[in-house]
Length: 211
Ligand code: B12
Image 1 (cartoon, rainbow, N blue to C red):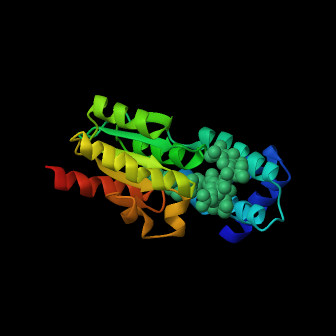
Image 2 (cartoon, helix red, strand yellow):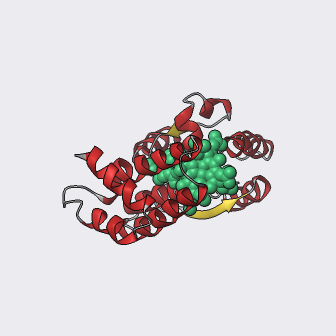
């Protein structure tokens, strides 16, 4: 069933048919949460399209339009903030040095909907990020990257924060970490999540170690 949905959704994205894509999202059924739909259908469809671009069968413009359509749809379906905030460490999320936004949007929205309060720094470069984290006294920093060069910059973030004496836990996610499951250790992160839903349990475990 999911395979058929992924096929249909991929087709709609490649045809730049926003209405068809929206209809698939709207017809997803009440027992499928927006986040589950995004992870089971949107993510595989975009990965498929990305692989097509890499293999030379699809144009970058198709990847671009697919990304834009998904960005709009995900914005519309993700759950709102939970007013009952959890008692928790100070947290922030950012995209480091690239412009792939969807993963960060999903993680941010899921965490807020699960009752976590976190600052959204948007797209940051290393030095600005380090300065902001120190200024805000952040305990847990979540970083999303979709390109390997951006992932490798996380090591510098970690080193600069350590140099300033900031004891910040780093949670990372995004395509490079899905491709290489040892990369998160190489860049000095404290944890890696394969998808947005992992983030809640990883943060809860980290909080246990902090008290
Ligand atoms: C859509 C897309 C684009 C769109 C982005 C649109 C947008 N507004 O976001 C556009 C067309 C703009 C684009 C541009 C480029 N792209 Co691109 N893109 C993709 C593609 C196909 C899908 C990415 C995506 O949105 N996936 C859906 C989201 C929801 O998934 P996700 O980000 O992985 O997030 C999930 C998890 O990873 C996790 N997660 C993510 N971050 C975090 C963080 C934390 C803390 C946690 C807990 C979890 C978590 O949770 C999310 C939900 O479960 C990928 C292919 C792929 N396999 O990922 C290539 C890909 C990322 N792109 C790639 C490249 C090379 C580029 C370009 C350089 C192309 C070019 N030559 O110009 C540019 C660079 C732009 C830039 N400076 O950033 C490469 C990167 C290769 C590498 N190893 O470095 C990829 C992997 C394609 C490939 N196979 O080669 N891209």
